[in-house]
Length: 359
Image (cartoon, rainbow, N blue to C red; front, side, top):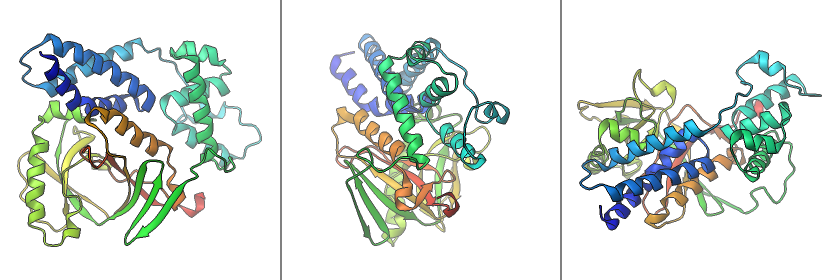
């Protein structure tokens, strides 16, 4: 394949490769490394091959192979499960009350995989940082960084840290009708209230991200949904009811996932009372009124897909909705919009009013 065609495919699928890597690793920095390895392998193979009939399937196959090698090479360690009460009782939390003890348990369990492992090894198994680095096959600097970040996150979440220069200092907050807008760094965070609505979706089988979804259903679903969305919005008189004038990708909560169907789906939002014919392969789910934080990044060049996505993921992972009196709501889907260069990468995460008893 000529280099210019290979370059075009890499640009087209770069964002999806990062999405695949993050869905597997659940860690921004590890995902970036894995995605780089995938892109390198994909590019090498593209230059050796001509007449690829299904680029998405081809890229996904290589991505799976690289990830399988990553799993094989990674040294796994066992760490105490926070779901096991008997194991948890063995931990040495001195001078802590039961309620605070359980809060620590809850917050450590929310850390990403590397942070959990490093916290457990360093504080509870009393393993030195150098040995942790060898065990996890990570540079010592990376271990120190993860340990520092994990401690910072735990201190913030447990209300143990005083305000300092590491906190978000420059925030501009204003109300605009039903929307509330917060600027932090170069990420625009907008509070959006969605009415009760239904979503017409195409379910996959086991898909967790774009690549596996395309392999199961094909890549033409998105083009069909874009055309359907245009037709639907032309038939709706009240523009406010149209929600987003485009299809969406969703990661569904467990209660909306039917047996033997996927976590990741694509679809369009519709007014709750909108009458639409359900075709073969389609399904609908009804969603209650919900509040979302929309994270929108800066405009970007096509070649900077990865950086744009990483900025949003990092912002979501580090952001505390309690700043606005909310907490994360896991009962509503997480939403991804199509990455469009001149508007920035966008994801929406559901929140709910903070439980006063937990303040």
